[in-house]
Image (cartoon, rainbow, N blue to C red; front, side):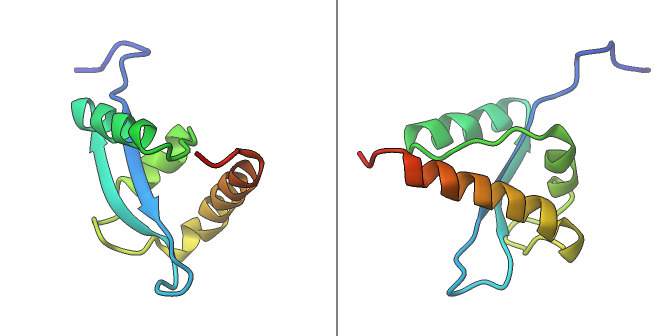
Length: 94
């Protein structure tokens, strides 16, 4: 059975990166559907920036929780972290 176009389940992946303690970003939460919605609500509650990229989210869904992202995703994730860093520099602190 195939899904009708546009009925893909929402996916969300949360990563954490502490350059003082980790060699690479770590997947700290991931989920589809309702769980993805909960991850996004939590991000909004804590003013965590959200970056949308369905392809990358799909690849990160394959990474085990509490595991570092694989080297082949370093470049894509580095671009996101740079985007968030720039965003953080221009957003007033609460």
